[in-house]
Length: 310
Image (tube, rainbow, N blue to C red):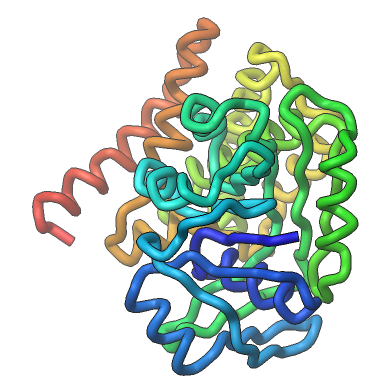
């Protein structure tokens, strides 16, 4: 199975290193500067599942000329348009495209670009950071890549993909019968966490140490879950119980990548997560002031950044 991974940041780099180490035919599609770094130094991963220092195959967009069996897209949501242009030569009639972007909206965009028959639904749960030296720091034992058909069910190709990826140490591929449900549950989790941590500029534990913060966090979670229900994807009881507990722990240090982007003065995925949450809520007749405040906060950050204030 020929695998192309778009991106060699925290997630793309981790997947690329682990799958290469497992003996799969993996190529990383990267920008020229990252290619030069990886070609010179290799890819380093530090992880509880074992450290790696490995040579990886790399290409830039102008070097992609033939189809791959699977294309894994790890771009930021705001880079989706350029990602589609970069992977187009790699997508043939039988190629599977597995996007593991944050949010939900990218599925429709990719369906329009390549046809829904080529696009899998998927999520990733791997906590990793790309360090200044280009290495990948795997932060804990999260190692799950979940995917499946948009219309549901376990197809032969999804099972074959799971089995091919299962050889990698430090990675657990999971074939889902209802992958879109998994995507919506992740959206509920991420929109709640990003909305609250960015609005309050604090991690989850710091927020819920006040009664007011704890109440707002739970309200945000319950209302976001209601958006998912009205969209046809009600979160499971187990999911809700787990995240009610997570978002009530005063000792939690849980922060989000969006908060880290805000604190660093970087562009965020706010439009694709908080903007989508607000617009979807409105479509279903939910007028939530907390959603407006979270979205306005992230939009103000983007405007300040573009004005040169950060």
